[in-house]
Length: 250
Image (cartoon, rainbow, N blue to C red):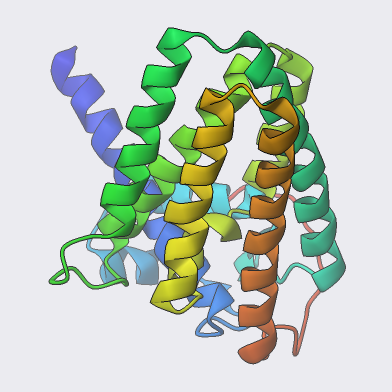
């Protein structure tokens, strides 16, 4: 049983790493809209079986970066600028509200967990200089630490419906979690380290209004970094608005 659980965990981690790299390739324009994502080619590229490849493609489908159609397999799709703006604007308001609610429910245990999560973000967002920013495992680690910080606040808000909606939006597009690749190091450090620390300090002070505004500004800042990056790379050219929802079977 333990070996089975370890195998499942390994495949899930591989799927996360592969999905992250493919997402980065799509956002950087290395994979153009309409490009085919053939499973056998991806297996060869990443040196894995089809299982983590299928899981990675499902993750990208949930983000609406990949579509599936009968007899066509997986194809790269591009979100529109309006879709990205709508997702981030909603997240900014909802995550800000969650931060305000969490302030009213926070306790000593919350403080300890939030400080630890903030420290983890800082550690992972400022890695050993020998590790390249394109390192798939590093990117997943940074993303997970950021997600953990946000999730602690959301779960403390005490509103299950609110958390569910935020998670749906989060799953739709994860660009904010790879923005350390999209901005120069100084901007990325402000986004990941300074802004999380500011949110933490407002939460520890139980200043709900400040926490709400800081969280809102943080999400909107991530949106700006993402959109500026996509504008600069010409991401919108050749957009394909197809949205087939078959499952990967290539």
